Length: 146
Image 1: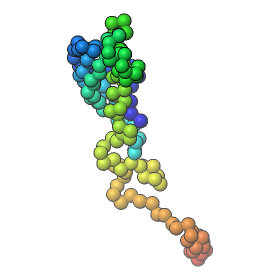
Image 2: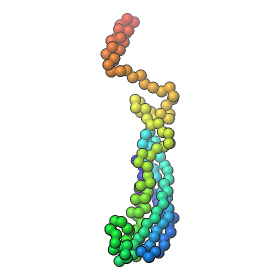
Image 3: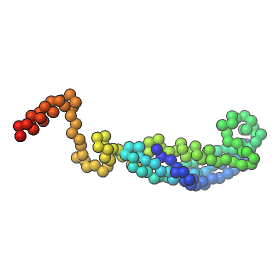
């Protein structure tokens, strides 16, 4: 999981333009994000940059009257609320499965070590469960003979 930390700053570089139907806000939002790699659980610190273009309709404009409430943002008491638009844009830009490196190999399923830190000769001896009893039998015989 990766997210903008609580209290983290989001930098906005926006242009507001008055248009016939309202105010057009366009620009870029930047935020620092932190989280954990989805494969090896190493901490990740990254930045996200998203483009934003949103029309805020004037009260009683044609756009305001002909669209649903959730289709176009509204200007309320001469104020524009950017928070939902910026939040949604940043959340949609975040990866669902963040990786510390594009080729992260994750963790060893046997011991839980990071493959990046384990040597190329790392491995675990696995015994087919169908033969486990036979191995136990022979290992007991070997111990008795010594």
